[in-house]
Image (cartoon, rainbow, N blue to C red; front, top):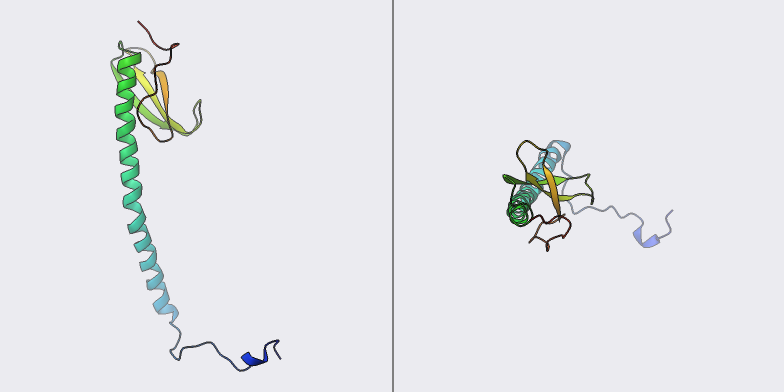
Length: 120
């Protein structure tokens, strides 16, 4: 006996048979593919935009702070001086790359110059 006498004898069903395992597996697969198809383009666009923004911002920082450099490189690093972020490096001939600035987790316009890094 249940605690709810009004529900005695009730069987939840709308009259149709439940779907079989044979039908549920392809349905689950379709749902997973659909979710991936909705999320993946957003991730790809976000990564592409962040990469391009970091490259342009790093080129501006290198031009301003290290005009002697031969190029610039923006890299996303999980373990860096300021934690996970985009870091801007100046490429100097015959020397290791010189870390100039952290562009942040979401790169944007470069920050004002840092006096200790500006060279004349």
